[in-house]
Length: 599
Image 1 (cartoon, rainbow, N blue to C red):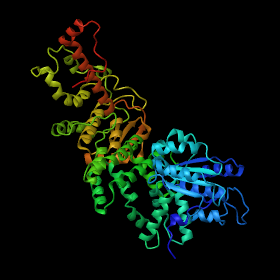
Image 2: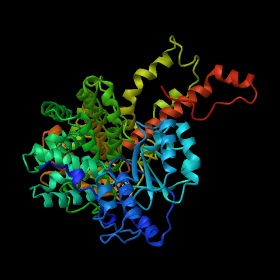
Image 3: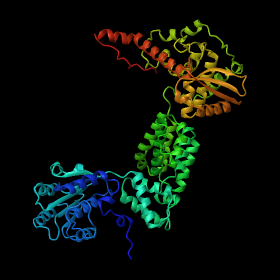
């Protein structure tokens, strides 16, 4: 006996067998029961979701005579009468299917209209089904309009299209339109499970999930892929075999990428990409699987517990969700989606995949300026200088900084407020060339000398501020950031936190950090940061996170430094004689706020 593919063998024969299109089945069923029949129907939707199938069932419902030959219009065709059997076999005299992709010209439509003039030969209604109707030419549409608007009472038109936007509005207005929905993966999976059970084919749940996902909402594609997978697996469906057949990426590879990106481990990222290349896995499939994992992680971060507990993939998303901040998850998700468009721009798609992933490693969190990497040797000496005060035990009575010292302006302030004799672009001016080379060093040294009062605010977590601890923490964070040791989320925690105390009486010593943002007060992040600091300092330590607004933190110092540099730049511009002369010459002229940027 000739083998019939699953997509044809299990094609629905009645409305009751339709899956995932309940809204269409209900509307057509009620119309058939009440006799409210329209003369033209338009079924829209993506491929393989049942447009032609619904058309055939509708034609059977209109022409069914029942098992005894005396039945009428019904929403439950019998399947045994002449009309039902011949329509299923595609040989019914009064049911015509025409493919507009190959017969979309004016002549073909005129021939169809001539045939419409004759009454049905054997049935109750003559049904013309035009598939891919959007490919009809404009002349063909115009030729069809009159008959479509006022057809004979025995004639029914059914149009099907995947692109209703290309159908003329005058045609749309004459049709009763039904939009068939893409199938949900769970709907496809459940239907495939019933089909495989009927076929006595052993299968894995993981294999069904892969097939349902690869179907992309098309039940026909899902059944066709299942046929292919059965042949590939030798009569059974296993997840490994289906994954190899589809060329899809194992969830483990996507998990490894997320872990490497969260730890800012470039070596692990490159190793994972090399592994994907060795396995011959698609770079596009890698980004797709990564995006799906990130989507589940974002759901877990925003609505904890909302993921399906029965889905094995959800467990990995729940475990990985704490590794990335919500904004980082969204950023990486956007990079994965947009990166798919870049893969085709290079001959080596894995090189493009590598660049997409490395782009995330270059991301600098908001509030932390990425320190320049080249001048690493000059930074080393100042970073080791504050070491002696750091080894002492900080008792609850924290060293007090006199109020006067906290409010004294920076020594450089008086210098930068002096009038400048020439604009900043003049190459001969020493005053203008100094900031571009001295500013980076000032950004580190300025908080040591003194800081604005706004930086050292008194909080409930620390009534007194130890600037020695603040200096050491700021320099340590900048050093680790410059070396790329801190992952993105760890760097965000470090720059937003303030070091309140170091309790050496505990074993290991406890570094007490004050953190305002709740997502950063994560025990997992604290343990990772402690491991990085212990490796840098050569001694074990533990991180204690306290809730509160830090009086001093690297982010606050960076913000204060940016404000100081901005104020200095504005002072230079306003004090420049050339600028003053221009403002005096042009009445009403002004410096646009926000247009001055420090160099």
